[in-house]
Every structure is written in C-alpha cells, then in structure tokens.
Image (cartoon, rainbow, N blue to C red; front, side):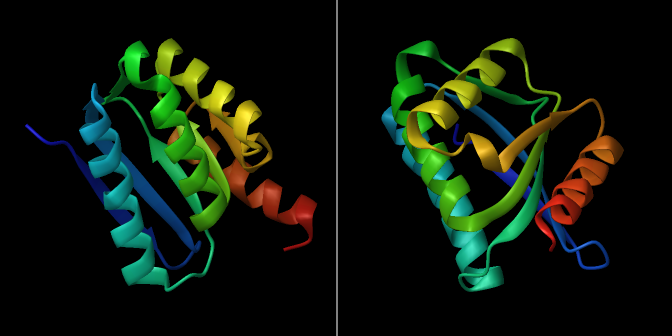
Length: 132
C-alpha cells in the first residue's frame, strides 16, 4: 500500500506542517514519496521556498534504499524549503537525514526539535538569525 503525506499550511506563521505516513522500502516508494512533495509544493507555492515542520512518528526508511531516498530528500529540501525542523524521527531516520544532508549539502537547512511547538520556535529563530 502506498504511503501518504498529510500537509497543513499555517498562514499566520507561514509554515507548512507535513506528516508523512510512509515506510520507504523500494525505489518506487522513494519516487512516489518525492512526487507527493513536488505536487504539493508546486501547486501550493509555485516555486516559493517555504518553512517546513516534519512530524515523523509514522515514517520509516529501509537501510537498503537509504542512499536513493537521501538524494531525493536533499533535492526536495534544497528546492522547496528555506528552513525545516523534524519532530519524532526514530534513530534510523535521523541518521539517514543527517547522512543525506552531509552528502548533498542540505544539512544547513534542517534542524530537530522535541515537539511541534519547539520546531515552530526553531524555525522562527532560524528566520531571525538569517534576517528574514
């Protein structure tokens, strides 16, 4: 069964909240997961980079597909997001995010927080630090 991503946009804070419900195991999964982000960001923001909070409690990555997933994750991050922050990532997901960020130059755009509220605060702090 194909996974899905629940998106919610908070206009007041100008932050997208994404909750992926995916267990990535194949290249087909990676491509479908990636296309869900592309479709949402292209249709909703037409090329404007946005800030993103990811709630990852129901997101898993098989080690056998981590390299391909990491390439697509980095591409999505660099293309569509300005600042992002992860919440509730398990240790494997955290490792794959950090690895793909280091390999593909996307690590400066992402952070991790203990709660959604902390993630929103981290995004706002990143904006202030960048003078945005």
